[in-house]
Length: 290
Image (cartoon, rainbow, N blue to C red; front, side):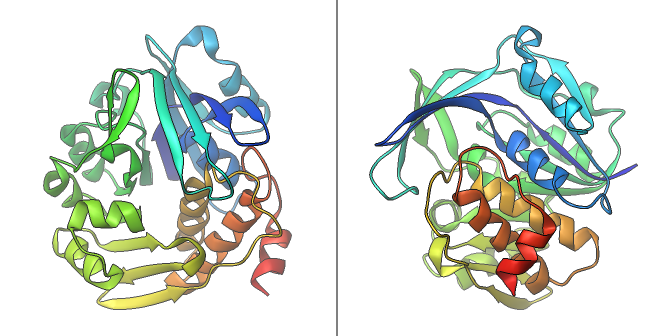
């Protein structure tokens, strides 16, 4: 049994900024897997993904990098276009040029882990039945962003989450940013939102607040996590996934929420400074924290 299994689609990404256009693989599972793979192997990890088998080069590169990957066949590979405007990397226009098949219970029957991190990219990636099934085998961790995206005519529209109460009652770790928090809860105050999410069944609520840091709520206690300023902001794509990887990695090793949050925040700072997934070492992370 692995400590952490991330389940999610690897994507084809077209990233457009005012200074350049970059084509690369991406998706929650992609950024999460590479980030955790850079850390000492004290936490065991596997990835379950799905894409068009004729486009499996990103999976082959992951296997070469030592990542344990299971590839399920899908009719399509998810294809995202992300256009960022100006200096604000939190603002982007997004299109989905192709969608992959949702994950099924049948695909996940032989997958065993203490924590299942669901890298949802679109609202129908994981049914409530799949989440309930995984929760019967381990702790479910969710980054909520994909649940709040609906695709119509290639354009991505923000939506509330119809099945949120059914899913959240089976969720142990939940990560949201400020916008997602308000969409789901209607609350502008992160502390009130965290308490409401907890009342819906989430054991550990993580709210990222950009340059303001992050907030963790667990066991009726709040933990405030600082943000670390990057030298320059190059690419925010995959930043939240990098945070999740660092946070869960440290929690699996017994770190408290503050320690895990600082570790995750430092990984985000490093990720912001370059294109592509997190590519540095634990030494670099600890230098930022200190």
